[in-house]
Image (cartoon, rainbow, N blue to C red; front, side):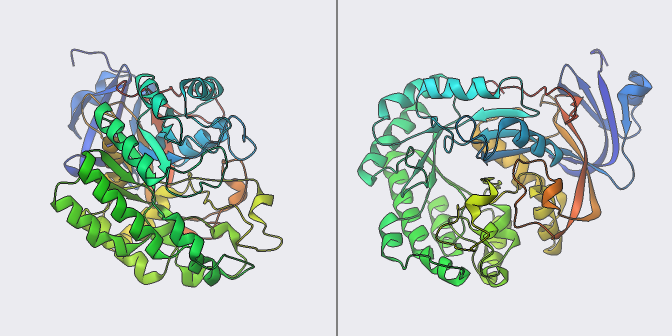
Length: 451
């Protein structure tokens, strides 16, 4: 090698752009500089302390990219903060996060708020972190400055977001935002549920999960997505639908793709793991919006991933203090809607994927490569020369039972508690340096176009 190497990793199983192969990976200056055959002399180019030889039961993966995380700092740091969230991410093999513009106070709807976010995150992040901006009524003039300041795109809601400081966009204003977004060459990520449909549904009350499910009908999601498809078609903007839960929308999305509409879609581990039939009444840790739906719906979401209609799987990690889940009363109407899952997303998706005949290359595509591409992260999500040396060592056959009290996110409440999953992350590397969650954090703040 003409370039000095800082690290060499060798594994019988490496997930690359060409699938699963045995390889020797060389790292220099934080980037992957060589991907060579397993028996390459690359291993002799570094000292023993800089050579990592993976065990036979381990697979080298690119670091995951999670583009949908609510970190909530500043303002609601008791819900989740940068230190706890990024520790959990690193322990789960996630090396890049993009933080949503709500539920922090202030929300990220102007440059001053973005700078407050960056100041809060600085010096306490264990993985790399970027930011979405927010598109809300009255801040159309702020989108261009936020774009110039490096946000990765903009987030909006079509109904009440759950926090008053981040109001929804009316449809006429949504179209103006899309015109602006198209002109900037960026993307609008949208919570797609129709407010009028939900206002007319029966309000959730008490412990009944079936009652809560009825309060968030599939039709609300389907109608909102139909509106977004047409407005993306009219404006030429890139619209990204977040946390798809309704499988009814898949034929419409596939049709939009065939017609060249710039529409992309994500779903989440909880929609691929749980089913409405198994949620106990009063188990408000399962509450999220849109909701976890029936088993048949779940299988159709898996089929949508397999067919490429759904592009990516990201966490929508949205935790809160235990008391806001109202586990004492089990009242789905009163409980905060959000799933805490950042640390367990990879084993959750892998556990479901392997049962359905998918391999780790599929999972990496959904959770690393495609989220990176959707966000415009040009050097993340793959093990290939020139990319950041963000890596994880994964033992896919090692089973464990989730213990919420041993997870690193701030509040010990998750619907995954007590669930048996396959696959553990044993090591995580960020730009060629092993992430130690008991060591000083070395994550970087990302700006659009910087990586």
